[in-house]
Length: 178
Length: 99
Image (cartoon, rainbow over all chains, first blue to last red):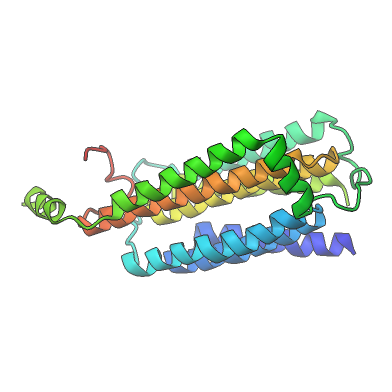
């Protein structure tokens, strides 16, 4: 049963990832990423990370992707030049990607890490539940939690500053364009 | 279900994201490919968390999600600002980051 679910999730995740890279219209790329994120959330469930899977679907595939869809619709289709900026960029990129994959795979296979060639050790019933993760987060990792909330606040302020419509900037841009 | 399958899958997804960052020129799609790479990292973190039967990896995965959300907000803000100023949305054109 787990095997079947894993392969469904894996095919969905790989297909979504390939579609994000390959599709020319950014809007379709965003939709492919949503499919990818939902498949990955299924894999998280197999790994008994229920809370992370739920957060992935609600926060990521829901809220963050809505932001992407809005920006993709606002900016519209972006024309990408067919020619490479550096000669032979595409074959080189695939070579680098294959090298990363092979290197990581060798590292994983050769690592001999604990329990990697099994389904993992037995875990207690509450593993990955909101209660367990939340308790760790608010006790042992409190400083990381506070730093994360501070980072979110800074990002929100930064976004407001960046996206603010300013008359002066627009006249500057017009001057720059001549 | 061997846990090493999950790790190999996460390596494959990370490599796909890296290829996307190197091949695509549109900043919006490059942000999407960064999301792919961050999610591959999250998958590896959760696999290690499962293999050690330790929930600390899941807290790390949550922090990665927070960082990804911040990256999206600032990145999309930059794209919208560039679009408003009628700059070409092509990373090859963004050679200098002057205000």
